[in-house]
Image (cartoon, rainbow, N blue to C red; front, top):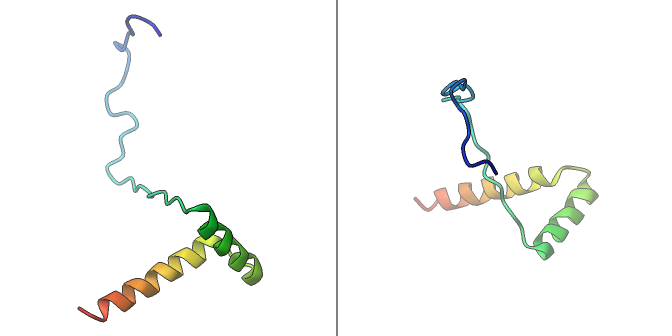
Length: 66
């Protein structure tokens, strides 16, 4: 690593995007991931769809109590 860097020709905010969205990574425990992967393979769908649908059902269920 250099002792000093020259940023005199740099442009402030060049890559800044105020409308950028960030996706939260979710890390599953191995046994849970294996289970969901088996379901995804049987139904021929992506594991993301299974997890998102599962969460949406839980949200709907929890909202029924509010």
